[in-house]
Image (cartoon, rainbow, N blue to C red; front, side):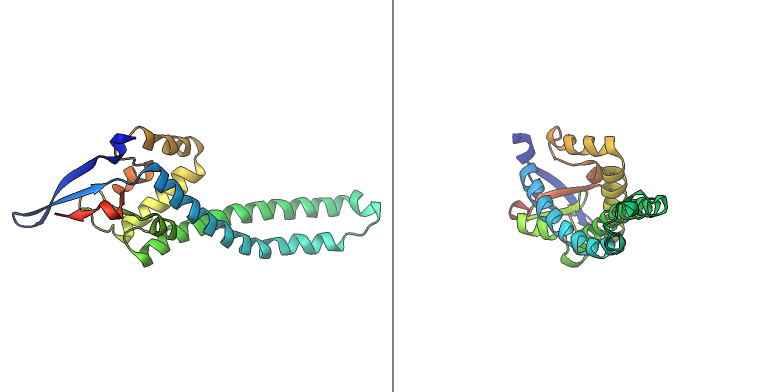
Length: 193
């Protein structure tokens, strides 16, 4: 854990032969986890609101069922219920993926420095590893769409590896950070000298 808190120095070329020394401390796993939990609560709240509309069709179907036992033995109604259930599950999964993608790309673009609401509260930022500047919108999309959604959400094994890898790296970077060449830094310990 101590290696996680080491101060790193990088030289960044600003103009011809003009260098500034940048110092930063990577965000601890605890801060990253706290930020993610706050973001997850926001995402779950949005998905809950969306799910009210998703459940409407299945709720209406259940209301049409009578109290008579024959309704529950009707093959057509059973098949319709199964179809609605699978449709609901698919919609919830797609909503989870789309809401996360929109949240993790749109909010950092609005707030800046790769910050979501959780990162803003936790006092951390996602920056380009080479320049320690705000990452470009295309890099942000790469980090979130490919790194977070494709690799860390849909694929199970890379997701597990991405959760474990920060414990063994001195810079606590995840797979999505490695893909997009980003680093998560503490705002209070990031400065230009």
